[in-house]
Length: 73
Image (tube, rainbow, N blue to C red; front, top):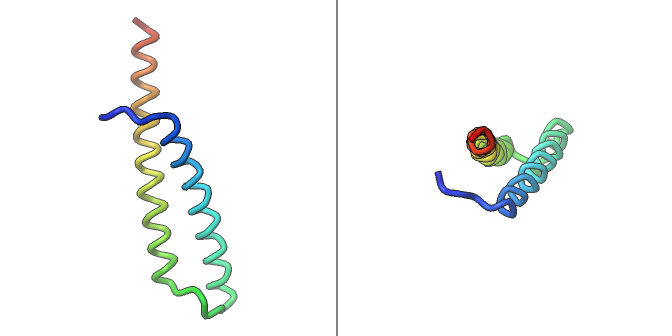
């Protein structure tokens, strides 16, 4: 796995927060019956959020294991 800078991880973290906020607002608008949001848009944002979170989580898990191995040596 390639090394990812802390700056990139910070951007991913901010993106996750933004996607979470957007999907929440979209779901509320959809439930209120507003015609400005369609279910397909919500699904698209959810898929992007899920992909971003999976990458962020998997990279952080790898990084923590690697850091533990370094400090044990």
